[in-house]
Image 1 (cartoon, rainbow, N blue to C red):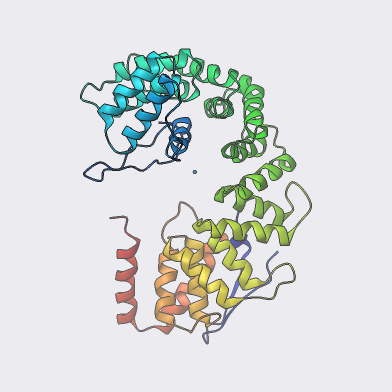
Image 2 (image 1 turned 180 degrees about the vertical axis):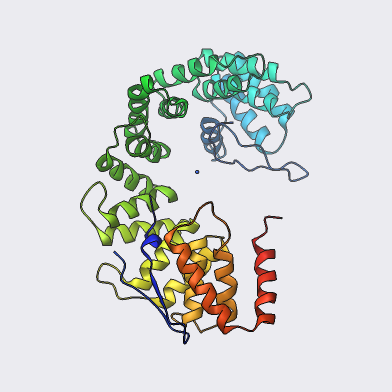
Length: 390
């Protein structure tokens, strides 16, 4: 989808310094659970279900009165969170011996990440399989990924079976992971099944699945290309905290894709994406502030603030907008030297020319006419250094 910046036009007044805009119509997903040993080493990410359980165990609920199995699991959690991995492994294995699937998953996790002297992929897989036999979703998903890498004696063909088992057990995350697996394989014969699993995950309230389901509906080669439904799910994903989905929803609303044109709603979603910290959205939001949208007057100074944030985060459209503002003095004090710096940053190769590239070229040429050659050379060196990935 082309961004709003593709509609940007500039009238360059080569005899002066005024420019004006023309009117313009992303091993298992998991939260990082932080803990520290004596050396303040960050723990590896826990599987999603274990991370949630550990958070509850850290809430201060009393261990007294629990079954021996639950008590062992609580002790494993406490030991893990303070960096006592060997102690955590011992308690997790005791919990697993009592039939606690989470204990087997934790034991596998510790062994897989080399947190114990006895660690090996084969030992980790043995514990994950024990948890999987009890239907533990984290273990099934981890096993599928290890199978894809042929680790621990697993075979590639087993990956699909483990994910299918997780999905068919009724776990929303399992349904999400299995749907994604089928989408990524691109098998037209599995398209309906992939969509059904993603739909189940999304409708079950798994926020992480909203954007993936929207993508499968709208943009997947084997999907139905249902823009109306996709727009709804992109909006839900954006409201749930997905920056890219918020930006896509906003652009669809602004452009009338998948429903009626809604400039106010689209601008709100784009701003939400910018506030989430998505650099590309910062540039889009800055452009809307420059233009004014949905009966809101232009806000050049606010636009410059957002363009500067996006520019600092290496978004080329934000860099171009900032260059425009500094060249024209619209929203910021005029500074041709810094305008030249940012237009050079914005002009870094991006794999093909677009209409706005020609506007960049014109702005760059105009600034070169206005700046002495020694200044140009110094700024070119600075821009090249700052653009380098090294």
